[in-house]
Structure formats: C-alpha cells, structure tokens
Image 1 (spheres, rainbow, N blue to C red):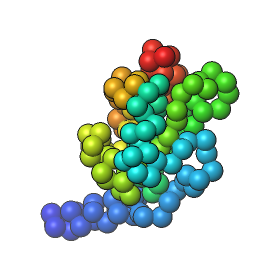
Image 2 (cartoon, helix red, strand yellow; image 1 turned 30 degrees about the horizontal axis):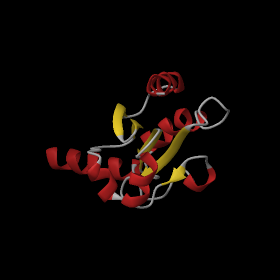
Image 3 (cartoon, rainbow, N blue to C red; image 1 turned 45 degrees about the vertical axis):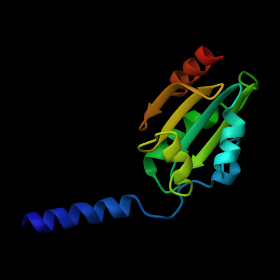
Amino acid sequence: MKKILVLLSIGLFAVGCGDDPIVDTATNNLVDITSQKQFDDEVKSGVSLIFYHASWCTKCAAQRPAVEALTSGTEFTDVFFAEVEFEDFSDIVTSRNVQGFPTVVIYKDNEEQKRFTGQGHSEKELRMALEAAL
C-alpha cells in the first residue's frame, strides 16, 4: 500500500510539473540572461532584480505577475530586470547559490541586497525591497 501511495504521489508531482512551458518568457520586459558573462556584466553596477525560474513551474508562473508588474511604468527605469531559466543555465544558478525556484534576488553593485524564495511575494513587497536598494 505504501508503494502505491508513493508511486501515486510521484505521478501527481510529475503531472503538475511537466516540461511544457506555462509562460512564453519571450513576451515580457525581463531580459533573458543566457551566459555567466552576460550576468556578471549586467549586475556589476547599479541595481538589478533577477528572477530565477523554470518556465514549466506553476509556482514560478504564480510569482511572475508581481515581478513583471515592476517592469512597467517609470518608477524603476534605472533598475536592470532579468530572468534566468533555472534548468538551462545551472552555472549561473550555482554561482549565485540559488537552491530552488522561483527565487527573486535584488543586487546592488553585484552585492546581494534581498532574496525572496518561493511564490507569494507581492508586488508591494518586491517594490519596497527595490526602493531600499536604490
């Protein structure tokens, strides 16, 4: 009976976390980071918000609207907004000690200022952390 429950649990997890993208990440205002060099160049000076995610992850999809909302408007025009596809760029993820997703990290001059892990962080919460970093 335990084996059946374990197999059912694994099966349900696999269905909820398939490899099919939930979000088309090419249609937003976040820059797609595709190399360690690009990442290093972008965060070395100024304030940056980086959204580490997996495009198939439902929790990442739930966190995405709060992140993307910050990119519209004129309040944070000096902030660099980007995203890192968790599984495609493991070198970046590892170098920044990101252990799960979604993870949102705010950097100032390449120094981590604030980290948000998991889903459920509001636009207001992210906004306040950005304001504190500026």
